[in-house]
Amino acid sequence: MSILVDAEESTRQPAIDFVGRELSRRVNIIGEAPTVYHTYQMYLVRSPDVVRRDMKAAQDEGYVFAAKLVRGAYRISEGKREVEGGVKILQSS
Image (cartoon, rainbow, N blue to C red):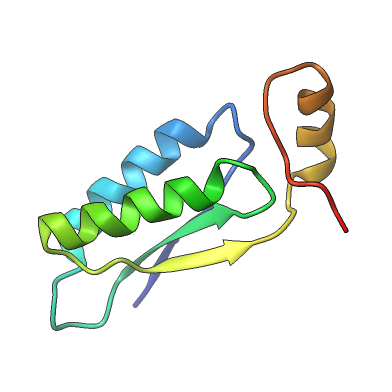
């Protein structure tokens, strides 16, 4: 069985990131298939740094890093938040 910790709008994401890391620490055991997969909203400018941080934490703390990368579930609402100065999103090419 797998658990996917879903991503949310950026205002809620720090708490969800914390829960995802804590669940991963507890159940994603090295040498076993991962159970918890954390979702990352890759259209956010901060996401590559967050992924690197979480990968390093898994390596340093001895658990399996597992991820689902998505590219735009909240892009429209986050775009409005970017205009207001609250979040940075990657520009489409």
